[in-house]
Image 1 (tube, rainbow, N blue to C red):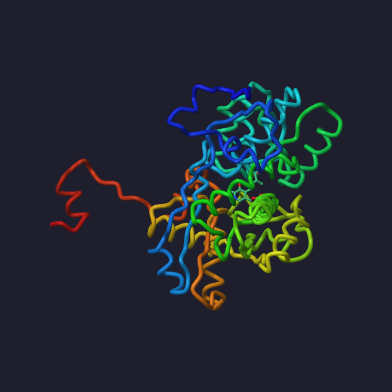
Image 2 (cartoon, rainbow, N blue to C red):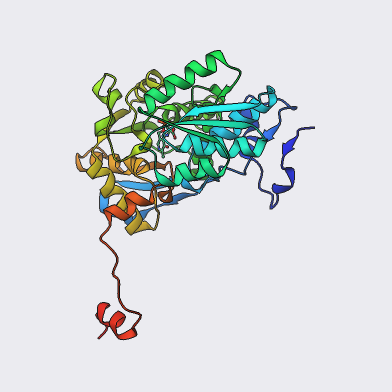
Length: 363
Ligand code: F0G
């Protein structure tokens, strides 16, 4: 009998993500499942936004901010932590721009494991830091960038019995494949184009693996074209060289030497797609447009997928009527400081009805 950690929480017939897609995942009958009931995130059709972009596209966004810790990382983490428990591990570690850390901290807490997260000092959005701290992880900020943090974590896991839960852990990629399964299940077929932000390049690798797995199993009869987008100041794959000092306001993807570089290129080339860059201004514009036209608040890195689609549409890339899915990888509340900075200030008034009505031009 399979053991589900916290079994009683699986009420309302909602099953753990990796239980639902078990036949596509490396789980045995005796594998424990550590779950916070992640996945099954909304695939929202966004016609109002699409009409602002192109008359050629039907646009959907997969809002991964609706996962338990507010990002897509939970898909991979439920798998990685379940397998860590199965292997008898007592401790986990990751390098992170914030979301992997939040997810690792939460799922480790759920499983009763000790967790350490190594962050680039001063470059992690506020919401993400608060999550790692609240979940009781050992939070260490190093005087360097994500690439430095990853190097340190790799050296530690080579020498000490601690489970690495970065996407170099193959179970992370396995779990994240489920995003592709859900998109195909919801649409009833794969989209024509799949747009996604690229940082350490694990997620584009996972989505492509997921689409291929469904294709090989005969669930879908064709594959989507993968469109990856990096931030212009942190675009090693686009530039074709590591970026020693990557910069972007989208701190989640501020990465100069992605671990899954080759796999991302394979996803691009095998699907006949592309990996291009979008500027911080384009990212910010897309984030605001999505929030203001559709009521969906994603974090800056996530908006890179929408910014990329806007850019490609303006170049005349979408020539015939087609479906496009943008993955919105994390929730906007992860980075409230940035959101407040990019909006006009709110108005302060005395607690007086006439003053408010006047401001609203009612009188
Ligand atoms: N979007 C968000 C919100 C992310 O947090 C990340 C990566 C990405 C996109 C890029 O995904 O790395 O698989 O290409 N965040 C990692 C972290 C690096 O540590 O949280 P990727």
